[in-house]
Amino acid sequence: MAQILVVDDSDAVRSEVSGFLSSNGFSVKTAVDGKDGLDKVKGDAELKLVFADVNMPNMDGLTMVEKIRGELGNKNVNIIMLTTESDGSMKDRGKAAGIKGWIVKPFNGPNVLEAVKKMVS
Amino acid sequence: MHSSIQAAAGMNEGESATPDVVSKVLVYENDKTAVNLLKEFFDQNHLIGYRVNKDKVIRILNSSVDLGAVFIAEKDARGNSNIELALEIHKARPELPIFLRREGTNVLDDYPEELQKIFAGAYMRHDVARLKELVDMFLFTRHYPTEFVSAMKEMSLAVFNSIFKNAVVVMDPPYIVKDKIIYGELFSLMPLESPWCRGYMMLQTEESNILDVIKAKKTSLNPVEANFRHVNAVLGELSNMIWGRFKTEYGHNDNTVKHRVEVPIIINHARKYISFGSDDPQLCFKYSLFVTGTKVIPIEIYQKFVFSLDWAPEKYSEGQKKVDALVSNGELELF
Image (cartoon, rainbow over all chains, first blue to last red; front, side):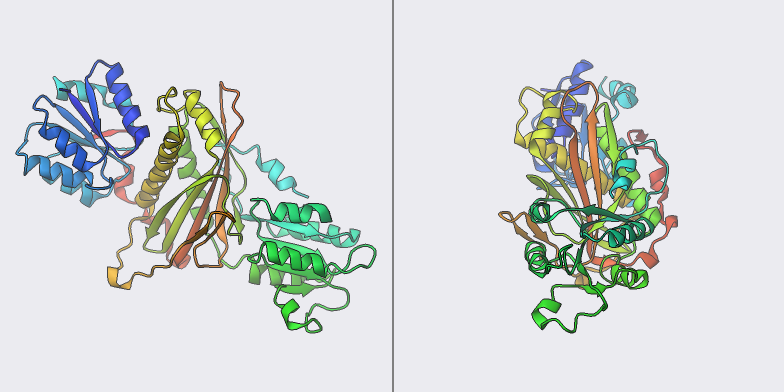
């Protein structure tokens, strides 16, 4: 069981984000695409926060979010998109699906630490 | 002759000068007057000349050095013909325009047809206007707006600095090539499109240098487990983030799917050759990353923009910056 899930098809991003979060005392697991992310959210009732990329193979991040809220019925887990995208219509889609926030890469751990602590507590 | 490159090697992220797009050209010329005239012409026309002797010509052409054109004299200093060499050059790099300096004429009608085909054109020693005409017709056939070139440089430099910790990035002047050579052992291909351009970005590099940087803990990856897949991850993230910034800057293409043109990309790994189906000159940047605090040799990354599917710079406008881009990268926008 983990508190935070990091979903990104990039090794480098998964390593960076999970490394930062772990070093700040959070338990973290990772997923390589939206499909993997969906499976890992399904299996973990303790999960408090998901960081998700948008552009991923097999299943993109926004579709994953919609399925988390819809098919899985999980309205509680906080979701922050971490992506190269900043398109307004994508953000609107994310907001409609109930995401909590949006970060345009690169990931800046110190900038988000306080918000992460609140979402996980 | 290549003083422009040495001067530019001092450029780094802090420089705000808008770079002129240049092109690197090979020069095989023994006549002193012609050499001096070419030098002056190159300085005035954004060309960087590499003057070589006969032995070096083919060696350079068989390497992965990207070039825009070749300037060659019809005869050497002893009056011997250089046409055989020109044929070898054309065989090694058929995409490169070859400009032939002749005495007494600037046409090629007296050559057999099969020889005429290998030359883009001929010029005489003092005929600068003719040289300019040839260069404009065969080399600088595509205009890259200065603001666009600057924007590509800035967004790419920002991405490199966010991925490689403690790196000093040195950039050569942007240049155009007509070559279809692949540099290094690996490259990424990223489709790029906007309402006024469509094509690809290539990032090319050598595996060993990036592996050294990962092992030196200068990326976010675990240095102990570093292998070629991690190199792929670094290149992938570089490409992804530059793509993201490009999309933020220029928006996406609204054309309906039924009108989309697609052209096959052909790659010959054995010959380190890649074709996007277009002969238009490609915009290139070369980055040398010096990672501070390590002894690794600089990483060289070659970035190439190939807008082979659509190019309409007349529609380019700085006003396309989207409001969304005002949210800083790395900041959390809460809803």
